[in-house]
Amino acid sequence: MIEKRERLTFSRTLVFLSLLFCAHFLLRGGCGALLSFSGLSDGVGWQRLISRFFLNSFSLFLPGILYLRFSGRPLFSPRGKIRPFESAGYTLSLYFLSVAFGWAAGALFSRFLPAAGGGTLPPRIGGIADAALFWIADALLPAFCEEFFCRHVLFGEAAPFGKARAIVISSLCFGLMHPDPVKACYAFFCGLLLGYAALKSGGWLLPFVMHLGANTLNVLVTVLTPLSTGGREKQLFGVLFFAALAAGAISIAVIVFFALRRIALSKKTALPMPEEGGGGGYAALILFSAAAVFRWFF
Image (tube, rainbow, N blue to C red):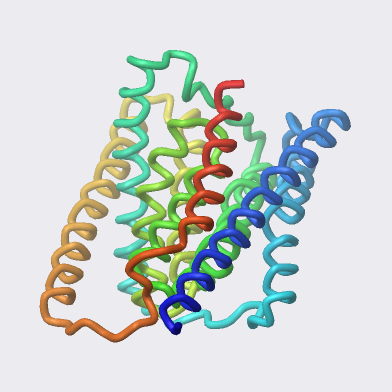
């Protein structure tokens, strides 16, 4: 009787998460249509900041807040603990994963699906003010709203049914919410690292710091690339870029080593993790995942 109740609870939780995931897509589509109609979607500076704030707030933060309210969970806790040196290592690891898997996914999809992964051109940065607004719009807001939605709301709901399930489900949703298959592919693998960081630190603060740091590095690359026109500037920029990638590769090797060591030394805990069942919940999650994939091509 207890196992049946656990299976039903897990299935119901997956159905609720799938409905929340679907609500995100509907709100994102509606916000995108309103922004396109108003002409703010292609703007720069304050226009870009307003459009990103509107899109992230209404499609990620607002449904997450409402879900937590109705489920009776705390709005922003547990946040977990972070350490500066550890946060830097995890951030560089995340940046390395995003670049490595982004390059691999881009090469793969460009061969078998040439129309995928085109993306949009970065905006032209006119000065320090534009760069600051660009950082808020493309680094701070997405990092906060996406980690709140994926590593706090989704991860927290799935965590009682198993650590691995929580990481995979939150990573799957994190990947599918990105607009094209290339970004979705490397976002999924980055989500695995973000989910592990949430599990290890006990909250979503460390994943937010990691996401913000990786986004900030991407913003710096976008801002500094047009400025490095001279030979010496290009060489210095290349050295710094590959130094960050090398540090990220070393960091992720260390993280994987200690994670495997921790798994080997730890004993299995008696969690309420059903071994079977949850078919209705899996069906709902697969259905809405298929709808997310469908929007990439049509």
